[in-house]
Image (cartoon, rainbow over all chains, first blue to last red; front, top):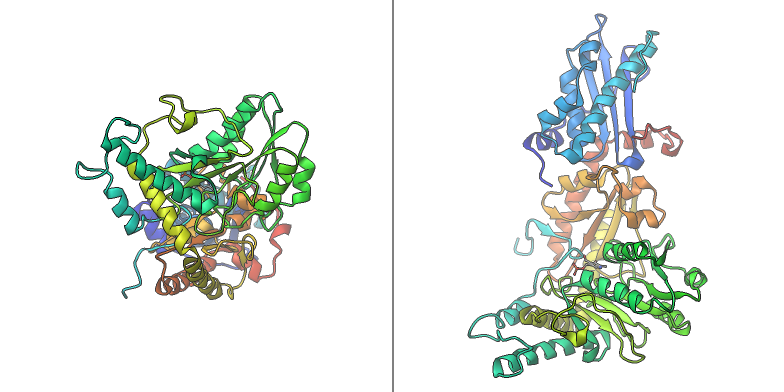
Length: 133
Length: 407
Ligand SMILES: Cc1ncc(COP(=O)(O)O)c(C=O)c1O
């Protein structure tokens, strides 16, 4: 299968690879997917006192499209409030990376990872969470 | 470097390039100056010459498997041979029984044919192999029943390269008067074949895995004791009624020449290929969390199927853009199903998703192997740096104890 230039770019030069201290109360960690399914994403976000995401890191086990999707969202969530980040939709990711239909699930996983990271953060801060997917 | 052709081709089990000698022989059967006649034309020299060429090819194919040339039926490839053998034998023997036994690690050409027969009312048992990919004969025998009419087991597995003990299975089926079909698409030139010693009744073959052309194959159908099958393609009654259609002289000549060469050069070629395969394995097996899939001993020389734990196969292939290999991970379907062959061995899904198949052959070189070793090591390292699973493994987390949010 041919990958889009953007997928190749993110795959070859992944942005914001890494790990933050999951115990830090300003860090939210979202881990989605399963090894048995062939992809696992771990997305971490760090918010400042104003509730703006100041840093994001990821690591992903999965195909090139999964790696690119998670790399892309680390760029997108930075500088956003939690509400703004939560509004990122998988179809925007899929469009930006020109994912073929069989790879749409990678963008869904990336959206889920954002939601999971935000939920983790809110839980830590004792905020009530809406029921997440 | 003269011996390093980039991209490096290490997918010889998918298909092989046509040997120059084969291409030459095929070329001579096409044009006005060449041997272009219809082998079925009985009234002139063009037909006779073409028939001669076809019969020489038939002898070469028969010789490699220890058969008589009258037992060879030309087909379009191993897929068609599998269909003809399994459907043909099942339909002909319907009155004797309706039970068929095969194995979960067979090629889709066999499995899908069996599925079709199930829809037509046959009952099929799909056996699990042992973790090394080989069949346990006692378990096979236990599955055999009075109404079992056919056992279909492949000789060499296309993904993991393991070699089944065909002679032992043949002894069993013969003693119970059950027909025995063998998909041997991957074996010519790699393992010795003797249909008599192995008690095989039908054997599927193809040319394009042995440096012959695509689109041509053969089915061996035993004459003594006679095996009868129902034709699947009807028409002019070619190939003793078992497979109609004008014979493709150039394709058949190509297959014959490919089999002749394979038969002659098998020993030297296998020791060369095995040396390269071992060089590749030795260059990779000192890495952490690297697993060989399938038995190492009962295996063809050119196959290496390896799982690189915590790295997903498709992304690994993406990193290896200068190397042509295939992956056991198919992250393209909605179900994200990894290799059914590796799963049938009982490999967990992670390892199945993390597998690559390297297959070497006639034109592989040391330089290509060394290049591959360096590229693979670099790619695995890079992807492990990116892998949350590798992180967890390094932190001592037992991945099986994690509650994954499966999707
Ligand atoms: C074991 C096995 N059986 C059948 C086939 C199908 O052969 P063909 O491509 O000649 O139809 C292949 C090759 O893809 C194979 O490896």
